[in-house]
Image (tube, rainbow, N blue to C red; front, side):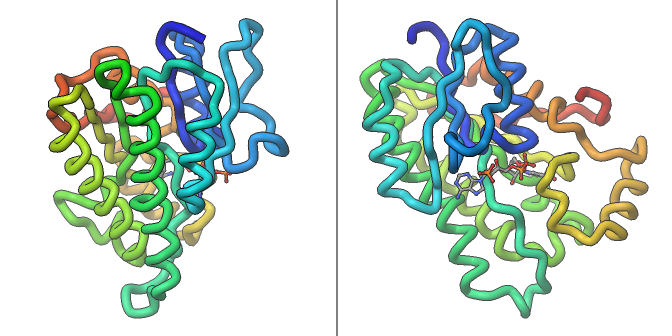
Length: 247
Ligand SMILES: NC(=O)c1ccc[n+]([C@@H]2O[C@H](COP(=O)([O-])OP(=O)(O)OC[C@H]3O[C@@H](n4cnc5c(N)ncnc54)[C@H](OP(=O)(O)O)[C@@H]3O)[C@@H](O)[C@H]2O)c1
């Protein structure tokens, strides 16, 4: 493989799948990171064979490093950290140690293992690369009861991922690391199954056009950032569209 190559985690999810499709349309080669690339079908087949699959389970940091080291692709230009387990929806006082551990294991430990492996294997030898992370508007500012309540472990994990991105670009920016984050509110994907439908209905009704963002809108914003990366060493906040119309 040569040319622009994107590695995306959670490639079978709503946002990840939309990003894979759009990146292929825009001429990227894609490595689709899936927990189980054999059983799950790819996000779509590509007649030019520009999609390869990589088993990435972020709950298994050692396996992540081994998968990157064994990957036959010679060059990766960008990494999109799109994967996340769904939020355990529980009140703050009922949030368990296991909730926090499971969320942090993926968002902080797994993503650190992946970015470190990608840096060593592909970015550093190439003089740099671009990492993009999907956070959540639940982190604020402003902190909102609509998006952040009953999600202490998820919000904490996204905060850890934001800090991980800041630490990575602070340290590796001089060696060429570019970093971007995007923080959507609700997006119409399978992840919403974690929530009470009535609460979702109320939240939808409170949006300007009565709809949440479509995953394609988030993917389009990520793709625009991929095409116009920030300078090394700066953490770029990717803007989101005001309205939900892009599918
Ligand atoms: N949907 C929203 O309202 C919303 C709002 C703000 C931010 N986000 C963020 O947007 C990103 C994409 O989420 P989505 O909405 O597209 O949800 P989704 O459809 O549920 O996709 C999430 C993906 O993460 C993968 N994943 C879960 N645990 C993993 C692990 N241990 N290792 C590797 N992959 C794992 C899942 O893989 P499998 O296919 O193997 O299950 C799935 O493909 C996430 O970071 C999410 O936190 C979503």
